[in-house]
Structure formats: C-alpha cells, structure tokens
Image 1 (cartoon, one colour):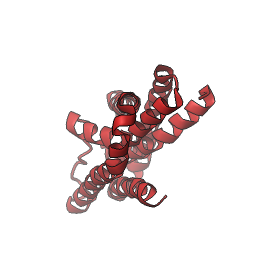
Image 2 (cartoon, rainbow, N blue to C red; image 1 turned 180 degrees about the vertical axis):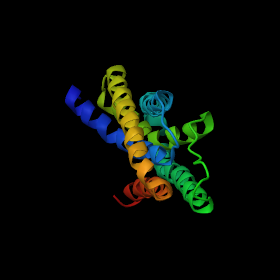
Image 3 (cartoon, helix red, strand yellow; image 1 turned 90 degrees about the vertical axis):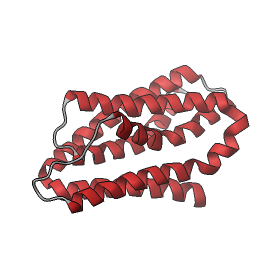
Length: 186
C-alpha cells in the first residue's frame, strides 16, 4: 500500500474516534491542553495498537474477531451514549457535566472506537503491508482528528449545554448502530 492509501485508511479509521471526541467535548465543562492530549493519546494510541494486534493474530483469529467486533463496539458505544443522555436529562441546569477523562472512561471509548482497526491489522498481514510506518500514520492521524474533535465539541457545547450533551450521547449510539449495520448487512 502506498503512503496515500495508508493516509486515506488512517482518516477512515479515525472518524469514529473523531465523532466520539466531538461528543466528549460537547459534555465537557472545560477543555485544557491536558484533556486534548489525553483524548489524542488514548484514541491515537489504540488506533495504532489494534492493527499491531490484528497483524500478529493474523489468520488464526480473523474469523472470530470479524464475527463479534461489531457487537462489542455497538454495546460499548450504546451503553456510554445512553448513560450520557440519562445524565443530561436527569440533572438540573446548574449541575456539572460528567465528562470524565479518567482511565476507565477513556479505556472503554478507546477500545470501542478502535476494534475495527484490529481487522485492518489482519488485512495488513494478508497484504504484506509495512506495519510500523502504517501504524505511525494511523496513530498520528487519529491523534490529530481526536484532538480537533474535542475542541470542536467544546466550542459547540459552550453554546448549547444540555442539548449538546444529549446530542453527544446520540452520536455515540449512532456510531454503534452504524458499526453494527455495516457488519451485519453490508
């Protein structure tokens, strides 16, 4: 695969992380450089890690991963989205948003948005793609898109507060449904 093909692939696999980052920014009370770096590193790191795992698992587990990855991603994203909506609807106007950038929250989101990258790694093994340069491109691209998404979400969230948090939850649920529908029907 050429540099441009890998870059296009990187943009494609980073879109879920970008959308989730927007949702995260929508619900954040404030966004600092630390949060921007946290989101970028979690999502970029996992988008780079999963193809490595997929590459080395290669042929032996490809069928198993492809059979359940969409259900795992859908379940995680739907649960997080439903929880965001529940919290937004259940709290008063002055209640602080629960937009955690903690380990557990970020781990779940990073795994949920990068499961498809595992299959990309399997395809890298089949295509004899240069793994290390490819994951570097994927990781950096996802880092940049995620950081940008968080900032965009925060900018919009400042204006729309509660509605933006509900919208962020709907984004997560929609991404989960998109992943599920693509794998089941397309």
